[in-house]
Length: 450
Image (cartoon, rainbow, N blue to C red; front, top):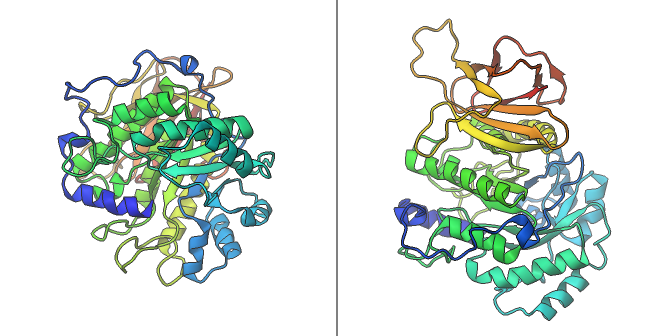
């Protein structure tokens, strides 16, 4: 993961050229079955445990030793920051995680290699041995397999995933994918995706590996300096829209990994608006899990991977406070939204990329800056996610303030009469909304509709 971040940083420096997102340039062969479905592929979606939202640090717990902490101290710090899981731990950490109420993904350092030569028998034998002592433990969410594979690894990964499904039913085979700004075939660097387009990469991954979920990372909110650089901001939206499309097509849950520090040396420190923006836009798009890269400010210099929740002198930072506060909201709202299915996303300021079509639920959303200030320039911009309950007829709407600097007011304009309840993001309790609810910069408001 760390090495690939440096590679991706180099790719960004080359510029986000058309070759990095080339769905519109035809002339590439279709290498996947356009008519495939979840049923025809025999997919087995991962079932998130009830009353649990995967919210995790993209760190290995062993990294905390670089910061003068024991692993138990590191796990306690992650719990204090309102995460629901520490992601990748060893079996030696299981008891401490249980005491903290964590679920977790087990990291087995024996699972290495390029997955291009492994046989069915080797995969079956290896996984059978690896999961034997933990497959029945309810706190084990799953097993780490690999990060950011190219398409050449898909056949071998399919064997590993099949073996985990066989020997540890209900456990997750954790694989995280590249974002679209990784290099494609035809770029001026070695191809990371090993496909011509991001869509080809995702479609082939689902059809060849038959995963239980989709996970990817995208740090363009940071790289775009809080969405002020349009080309990079567009990549953030394109990836969310495309990952969501493929996940819904194949009825798979999906997790998003975003930035909780300054990965690039030229990046500014994360603000609370940047942290909130990444969490709330993910929730509004229907993300079923959220990861933060990174918790510890690891790196080879004082200026890379900086301004993280735990800094290079082993102290908690203001970012830690920002992240804890947003995590508390994400856990509450994520648990609620995982009982719903995402039906639509749209934007109040649409473009060729961003859709503008409310579904049958809303005429729109009334939004405004503070009315008493008459010299405020511009028009507020929001992202709206619409949801339908998996059981029952309840609907939900998430409105996200896309302004990083100014609060807005918002209210829903329903097409048909209904009862609207606003959700307190810290407690999950509901209340009759004010005529106009305030939404802080980068934050969101969840409404439930009966």
